[in-house]
Length: 76
Image: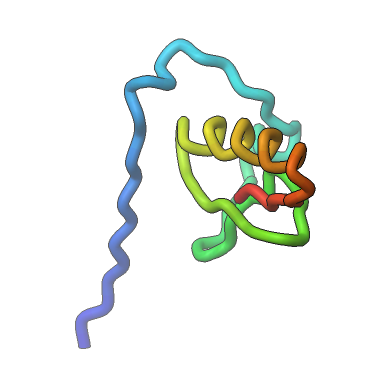
């Protein structure tokens, strides 16, 4: 039986040169990010916005706008 895993890594050239905060845990040599589990950037209870790369920044901005209308967004 042949078993294999495929991992696709997508990057966005629009974020080249931008800096983002990173935890000490993520900088650790033995840090592992489980497949299938997203990082919650913002807690929320009404809707969830899911994105990656520069889209996370856009989702965080949208969540701030929606908050003014009483909509509490989770961003992953």
